[in-house]
Length: 107
Image 1: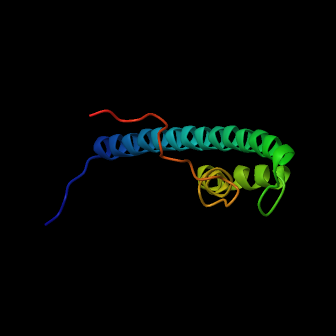
Image 2: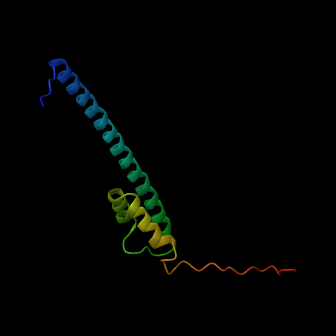
Image 3: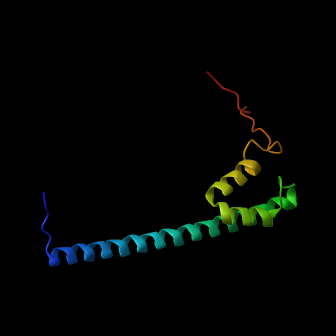
């Protein structure tokens, strides 16, 4: 079985592939820029929170600057690890909230 492809069909195929490649490349650049912006925003938020926490209690493992650099490179996952270590029940400094109510129940 032999395919007969004319020169115009061949040129049209290459034009389509070139255009598709440009679209995919532009989309990839957009995703990369968005990822960098998200990393920067999370790093700033972690740095500000770490500075605030550093005044009231000690930070776990490293200081605010290192947490900021780690979040710049690690992104959302590093920010989640920071939150889990400093703001969740994994941190022994966080007190357990009481579930008891002071109101008396009437039946």
